[in-house]
Length: 260
Image 1 (cartoon, rainbow, N blue to C red):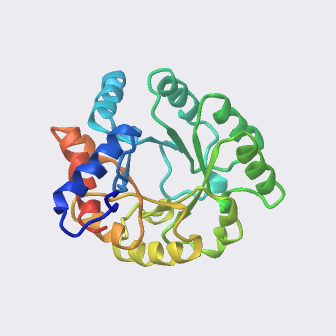
Image 2 (cartoon, rainbow, N blue to C red):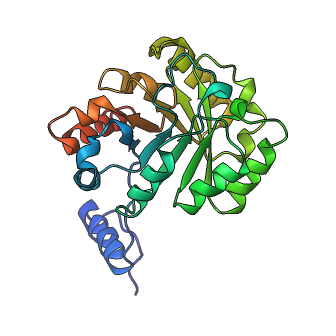
């Protein structure tokens, strides 16, 4: 007579062993808990030691690198007044030759198809555009160029901007990036307004799209932003002024893990 597959007399440990063997035999790995992505803002790094900075970020567990593209004198200017002269292409080319980490290019300048094509050719993996910095005639050409070349599209929005400026384009987005300060308002970090904006954005984009927050990230603000739906933290001074990059990154990721 054959034994039944399950008998209440068999100890629980027996079934735990069987499950463990099945995982080993079929090389099945248990699902890992999702974690927040850390994107160091590279313009905050020590530019005189950029090669070593990149290596340290890789070893520390950074998930991607955030590259801001705007003139050095950005404050008090509108997008239409921003100079086209930036160090963006040179910086992207330098980074692409030295790391396999995903590179996210934040185009905080007037943008068109040709500009996007240049950054794609230099190795960008994700391109963040601000729809309000692109002419109505160019916006769909820009989006089609990014998506058509297999690059991830991110939509940028300033904390003081209305969500309507990106809402009609969110269907194409892989990520939405909230900038917690506004260059037209002296660069002040707006924590409370950012929390409210993140909450609104998460409702609009749903759960499948990454929601990034750029500016003012530290151990105190990270949990507040994560609570409102942030899944990507663009980190500047908090990381680069720390003595141990790995420890700083782990502390931020632990904030996320305690909340999910």
